[in-house]
Length: 310
View 1 (cartoon, rainbow, N blue to C red):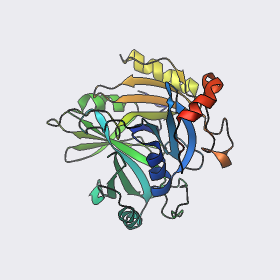
View 2: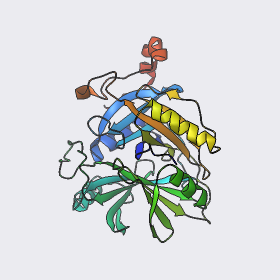
View 3: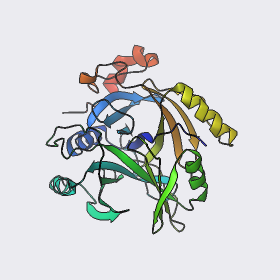
View 4: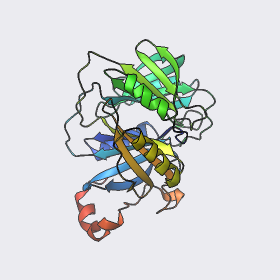
């Protein structure tokens, strides 16, 4: 069993419009844009990161905004809901804020004893704010969002699957423990995790497979402390039969990837070196940062990218 994963590192999704995506996460949700770079495999497209002040692992939502990308179709074999933690007693603040800003799909419910506010992102992305007690992570403030109500980071995510047994086995191998069952959803947690340490598995045997597009999660990343731990995790996964990529340098973390039995793409990412490796914390996310191999093409890349603010 793997003991070095402490919860989520980041979640990466796809969008159809970079400017609208940036506005929604920085203005509506009040998160900080901690990095403005490009898709390392397609530098004509932004890679935008949103999180807390420093882009702490467990707080970072990232996006590839492909202009005019086809909208996704929800279904099984995907991360169906990204869940953020908010302080207890703040659900009404967020509901009023979302209704005032015409956010789609706003509805409240209670899941596993916690009050939840569900809503949709600009491309129909499935999100929830979950009231969480004793979460001592500091939220990013601004845009009318004070520290007393600010998003603390992820609480976790929900996977939509035809059947959950193989993914349950994988999560257990990764250090998660089965915590509770409610209807067709089984909850797993990592004891002593980083706050973003909950995974819900929804068994949906009659639902069609999802179609990826704008509004769908591309991959979900789990956090390990450093490269040494990452190599240990990689070996453990490969020894168990998973096909895992070599380590890839993503500038702000090192990454490995593998496909799960349910079809979801998992990443294991390092907490090092962090988003301040090429700009100081006070100015994170302001300048366009490029991988070294693209620097000689900076003028061309910048000319082809739509400015994020008018």
